[in-house]
Every structure is written in C-alpha cells, then in structure tokens.
Length: 140
Length: 363
Image (cartoon, rainbow over all chains, first blue to last red; front, side, top):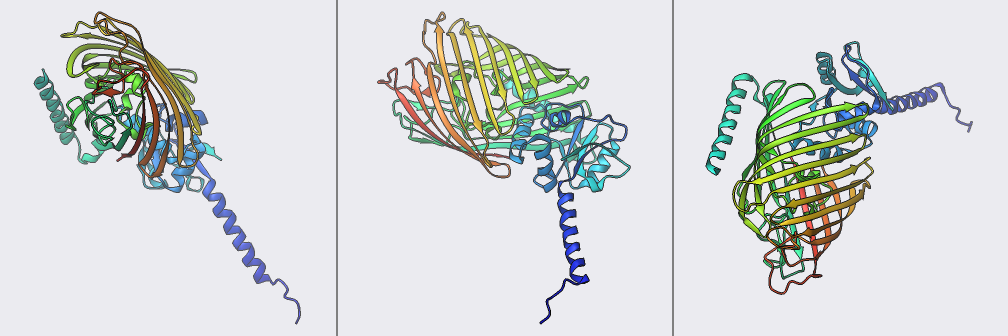
C-alpha cells in the first residue's frame, strides 16, 4: 500500500484549526480599558484605584459579575479575584461610602455608556473597539 | 428622646421616598436595595461565664449554653437612594443580638449626603461612627477576614452610630490619598459591666485615613461627653494600618481610651493571612489592658488577651464560610472584654477555648 501523503485538503484543515485556536486564544486575553474620546489617558495605578474603591475621579463601569471578561479584567487590573472584589465593594456599600460600579450586560452597552459620559471608564474586548470610544490602556 | 428620634427618621425616609417617586420614571435607577447577614454558631468550653460577640450582648456561649447561635448572627437591609448627582441617601436597618437581648430590627443609619464638590461632602442624620479601624463594618461578616472584629478593640466604646452631622473631605497629593472626617452628634453608649444601662452622650470625632497603593493608615480621635450619669468623659485615640496586596494581608489596630470614671485602657490586635485559591487562612492576637483606675476605682476593667486562627472559604458567589478557633485568657474578674454573666469562681488566668462557625452572605 503506498504511504499516505498529506494532501492539500489535510493541510488546509489543519491550518484552519490552528488559526481558530490562535484567534480564540488571543481574543480571550485581549481586553482594553476605554474612556470617552474627550477624556484624558489613565495609568494602571489609577485604574486599580478606581475599581478598588480608592478613587472616585472617574465613574467605573463593570460587565456582569462572574462573566469571563469581568474575571479576566480584575485579575489583570488588580490582581484579585471576584470574591475579594465583592468584599471590598461590600465594605464601601455597607459603610455608606458609595455604591459598587454599575454592571452592564455586554460590551456594546459599556461602549454606549462610556461614549455618553466624559467621566465614565469601562473595559471591553479589543475587537469591539470602534470610533465612539478611546482606548485608555490595553491590558495584558 | 427615643420617640423623637424614631419619628425624625421615619419623616426623613418618607420625604426621601416622596422625592424619589416624583423625580423618577424608573424607580430602580434611584433606589437600590442590598443587604448582608451572617448565620453563626459559637461554642465555648468555659462554663463560668458567657463568651459574647460584642460588649452589648447580655448572653453568649459557655455559661448560658454550650453552643450559641446569637453571638454573630445578624441581618442588615439597606436602601441607597440617588436623588440627584450630588444628593444621595442611605437607610440601613440591622437586626442582631444587642443589649435588649433580642433581634429587634433597629435603624442603624438614615442620612442624606450632599456632595458639594467631588472631594467634599456633608451628611446629616444618623451616621455610622467609625471609632475603630473596622468598627464601620463590624456587622458585615462578608467584608471581614475573621468571624468578628477582635473584641478587645471595641470594648471601650459600644456606640456604632451618632445622630448629627459630618463632613468628609478627600485630598490627593501625588499617589497618596487622604480622607478626613469630622463628625458631631449624639450617640448611645452601653456602660461596661452594666450593659443594659444606655447612656446618651455628645460625641465629636475626627478621623484621618492615608492610603497609598495597597497600604492604608488611619488615626481617629473621639470624645464623648455624657448627657446624664455617670459623669464620665471619654477620650479615645485609635490608630491602625492595613497592607493588603491581594495574595496576603497584615492589619493591626490599637486604641488608648481615657475615661474619667472607668479609668484608662489600652487595647489592640494584629492579624495576618494569605489567600490560596478560594481559601484565606488567618491568625490574630488581641489584648486589652487597663492602665489606671478612674473615679470609680475599678482598676482592671476589660483585661484579657486572645490568640486565634481560622480560615475563610469563598465557596460560592456572595457567600463565604468561616471556621475560627481562639483561646481567650481572662486577666481580670472585673468585666473581661468578651464575657458576660460571670459566675463566682472566675479566676485570673482562666482560659476559654472558643470554636466559631459562620456563614456570611451579601445580596
């Protein structure tokens, strides 16, 4: 029996699978912090301060608690997991010092909110960025 | 006095409700409800006194019963109202075992906050009194690393809120943020050793908190002047720090109380812990020591020290479970900080081993 040689079809399929894996891997990690186009850039320290209730210079916006992008964002921006974040905001809420960030259902809603308010800051997938918002900080 | 206070709070709540209803097409944008609670059970093997969760509780574990579900259990419900960009309000109702010996819900806070600038705000009404580093969240188990705030530190001042006015000012100097608070009002203190005799006091409080990255330091000065017996003026200075980079933490708090009637007391705690996945084990040491007697000539009120350790498990969203063990050494027979119902036979040097279980939740 002649040896099976890789055909064009096999290579193309393999390349496609590899491409999908690479693309989905990259998409899951690429989160960017967005602000209103009229707003100033922010540093990583300022970002952590905003989302850890240490600063109210800007209005932070969250995505749904526990969602993949929420967990990934807090891990990269603050080094803390969901339970720690919840406890920090519970302290702020139940001591009357403020309220936790508003949670919006998806990146489209976050973009709309940030575009509408010069003091808002949020996070979305890099692929969702468009001209209505400005990228303040990539996270990786 | 109690009647007048209650109707003032009800009037504020009604007024807030009316304003919100007229202003808003969608009420949930203006009013948000949240809450917290703990289901706890504690066991003490020392049968000559009750181990209690705070200085106001009349009963606990040990003498009255071996296991007590009332020490740490509580439920709080809170309504946050956003009336305009600058005006907000909060009402919190808390139910826990307190000096009345039952879980009667009480209005813990009801105040309006006006944000004058982004750094300056003023509040009016019943406001939380942040005497100690953690006193403002002592009822919110979910926000604490331990089952309860180490009791020695909160022994000298049981008031958790004051009716009056406060001013909050935030100053940012480079990477350091400073939060200043000045508060005036009247509060209710329960006297040590006579937990059921409430005393109305005038209180003035000043607090300064410095925050730099994951570190924060606070300094609090509080002065209470009683409106009735006993003629005890209380001046309290509290200082503490916390360093919490996320994977581990260390925190300490200390206070010196000068009370003209009950004497001088110094107390404090130090605690540290790490975070391993969903588990956060911790350890702590706390102590209370009487320095001198006041006009009451009671020389050693509150004295005790505690060594403890425990673990917190964040097993599900908005829930955590804690297991804590501690060994408390009684250093006085005059009202050791964590105990009530002392029986004849209590001796200096006696030890109580306490096991506490707690389920905390927020919603």
